[in-house]
Image (cartoon, rainbow, N blue to C red):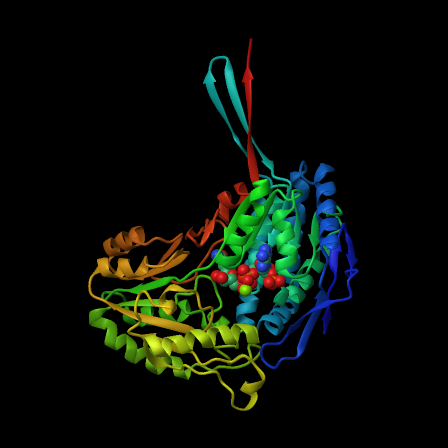
Amino acid sequence: MLSSKNLINGEWYKSKENDELKSYNPVNGELVSESPSSTISDLKNAIDSARDAFNKDDWKENHTLRCKVLYQLSDLTKKYINEIAKTLTLENGKTLSDSMMEVKISADLYEYYAGMARNVYGRTVTHNSKSLSLLIREPLGVAGVITPWNAPIILLARSLAPALAAGNTVVIKPASLTSGVTYEFIKLFNLIPDLPKGVINLVSGSGSKLGTELAKNSGIDIITFTGSTEVGKEIVRNSAENLTRLSLELGGKSPNIILKDADFETAIKGAITGACLSTAGQICYTGTRILVEKSVYKKFMNKIKTIIPKMLVGDGMKSDTNIPPVISSGQLETVMDYIEYGKNNAKLLLGGNQMLEGEYKKGNFIEPTVFYDVPVESKISQEEIFGPVLSVFEFETEDQAIDIANNTVYGLAAAVWTNNINKAISLARKVNAGTVWVNNYGKNYSAAESAGFKQSGIGTLRGLEGLNEFTQLKNVIIETE
Ligand code: NAP
Ligand code: MG
C-alpha cells in the first residue's frame, strides 16, 4: 500500500489532520493508497511557499535552469515509466498499456517544454522613428493546478510543463481518487537537486474544500483546471472576486462522423478506438456519439455487433484485457443510471448491464453498451456519461450530420472519416470543436495546441500558445528625445 505525503517548501509532510484519503483498486476494492486529507492551513502554507520561491528570482529569471530541470524530469519519467504506469493502473483501472502510453506522452510534454523554457519571447513594435514598444512576456506568478482522475499523469503534465517552462511556481491539488499515483510521480523531483525549494508544491485533499480555497485565494495568479464543466463553472464563480486568470479544460460529448465513402474497415476501427474502451470510456474526448451515413449504417451496426462482444472485460493489469472497470462505485452508479435512462428512451443494441458474476462482482465492471435510435435531445445524447456507453445515429445528408454533431453544449473534439478531401475539410470547418481528427481518432502532439469550444473550456494547452497561457504581456513603451 502506498502512503503519500504533501510536498511543501521542499519538505514532505503528512497533514496535521489525521484523516486520510483512501483509493481502492477498481478491480477488487483492495486499498491502493492513503494520502493526506489536508487542511486549508496546509494549502495556505503551500501557496506561501510557492510565492516565496517565485519572489526569489532564481527560478523565474533563469531559463537555463528551468530547461535543465524539465529535461531531467522528462528523463526520470521515462526511467520510472514501469513503476508509475503500474500504480496508475492499480489506482485508476485503465489497461497497463494505456498507462504506459500516458506516462510516455507525459515525458514528451516535459521534453517539449524543456526546449520552450528557453524560448519565452515577446516582440517589439516600432511605432515611429522615436517610439518603440517592448512587449515582454513575464510569468504570472503562482499557478494552482487542479487535476482529474481519468488521466492524472498526462493532464498534470499538460499544465505543469508549460507553467514551469514559463517561470511560474506551482501548487498542485490532485484528484482524490488518484492522489497516490500523483504522489509517486511528484517524488521524482526528489531526484532533481537543482530544483529550488518551493517551486513545486503538492497538497492532496478534497476538491470541495481545497479546490474552492485555491479558486478563492488571492495568492493564486492562475488556476489551470482539468475536470468537469460543472466544477469548472464553480471555479469561475469562486475566482470572480480576484479576477484570477483561468485555464479550464472541461467535459465533452464528441461526435465521430463516418461517411459512406470512408474506408469502412478503418472507420470501424476508428469508432472502437474513439470509444476509448481501454479506459472504460473515461476520457474527455471519447467519441461517444457515432454518426453513420445511411447507406453504410446497417453494415456498421452488424459489424460492431460482432466486434464489441469479443472484447474482453477484466483487470487492466492483464495483457489480454480490452475493457477495464470504471474507477469507483460512485462512477459505476452514475453510468448505470444513464444506461437505465437509455433503455427507456432509446434502443439497446449491446450490453446494458453491470457485471456481477464470479470475479467481476468484486469490481466496478460494466458491459460495453451501445444504444441506437437515440433522440438527439435526450440525456444520453446531451450529457457526458464517462463510461463504456456509445450512441449511434443515422444521418442522410451532411447538414443533418452537422446539426446532430453540434447539438450539445460541448465542443471538445470530433472526427470525420472519409476519403473525399473536400468533404473532410468542409465538415471539419463546420463542426464546433477545438480538435477535429480526419481519418484518425485521439492523436495529440505536444507541439500542437488543443482547446475546448463552447462549454468544453477556456484557454489553450500544448504548443506555443500553451506556453503563452502561463505568461502575461508587459508593454514597455520607449520614447527617445
Ligand atoms: P471533477 O469532478 O470536475 O474533478 C476535477 C478536480 O477538481 C478534482 O481534483 C476534484 O477534487 C476537484 N474539485 C472538485 N470540486 C471542486 C471545487 N468546487 N473547486 C475546485 N476543484 C474541485 O472531474 P473528474 O470527475 O475528476 O474528471 C472527469 C471530468 O474531467 C470529465 O468531465 C471529463 O470530461 C473532464 N476532463 C476534461 C479534459 C479536457 O482536456 N477537456 C480531460 C480530462 C478530463 P476531488 O477529486 O477531491 O473531488
Ligand atoms: Mg467528478
